[in-house]
Length: 156
Length: 299
Image 1 (cartoon, each protein chain N blue to C red):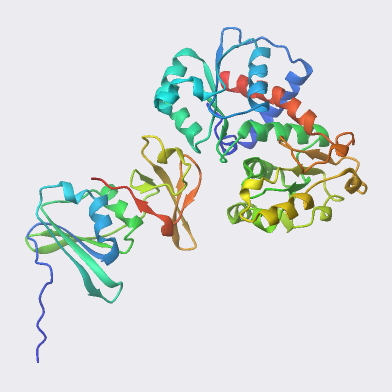
Image 2 (image 1 turned 135 degrees about the vertical axis):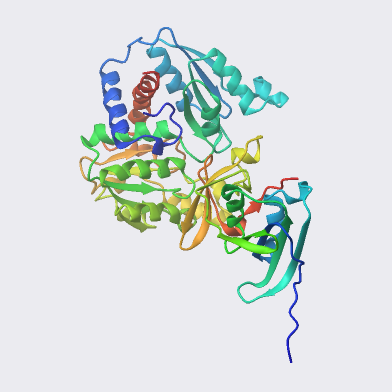
């Protein structure tokens, strides 16, 4: 018997597909990329079965392409995400994320007495990979924010 | 060359040695009014005795005039003025800003806004680099060198900003460290990792009498009551980490006791008359070191 194969999230003609996003990070990815503020057509699915992640999410954005600097920002929360560039329903380019050396204005410093949590200042971190775990060193208070304490600043 | 002094890590080994050399020159001749045309702003959003007074003395001895405040309660900060606006305004009036603020990272932020040099006089429990430089000056002056010394740091090694900065600065000079602290106030792992990466030897102990005989420098810090969740544990620990004169019997003749001050229980008054006591001279060295820092940033 032939298995029926169909897409859970319909294909787009042109644009960008972000695949292999951990399901629980979907809305943070939407937030970081500011997707709720753009007028392009966006479809997404979440809690889809994934061998790699258990449950994954996928986002398809029509007629929108991202610069590397822009898309690499999601490496913080979805390091295994795959980026497919679609033209005329075909994947014309596959990209993997690389962790940027610095992160500006996306994450919140976990130190409650850091100046960035009290004054109108954009946060700035240097990324450190320590024992395969990504950590953020605050440019201002010099304290480390680890993945467990990572909070994303909303773009809305 | 650094334009500001925000974190001790902003200064290279050479820059640190240059400041110490200049400080020695100012100690020989403390009145050198070379900056008569300069105005130094001393803005303290948090209480301070030694740091503020020694910075202001240093600026006065260099001939500069000093403006500022020692209590943010009398300023527009109470009306909700941001750090940015305060710094923008103060930098219109002064040629250099000395700032203490309770928020960590505030000095780095101020230095990015200010067109004139900024000196961090303490930002919360983060950094206090001028204290570190005066500690280094005191160590060099009493030991005749900075290299290959045995340094015993005692007390609150978890939260003490002077401990962390001194440890980083001394790492240029191949020290051996002994960290003497109760379990609750042990040196955080990130600093131990920092030392391991640089192949710097260190040991840890909970017993104050363990390392006194080997030490060249006994760096005492205050064990603060508010750091303990258990009041009984504080009462037990505060006496364990109290140094008295009888404990100094086996100490090396060159051993000196340093303390960033203020002290409470951790050094008994009978130590004050010992040849090993150096903490008040250390505070005096703060003026020469701060004259050197101001001069370096003006040059």
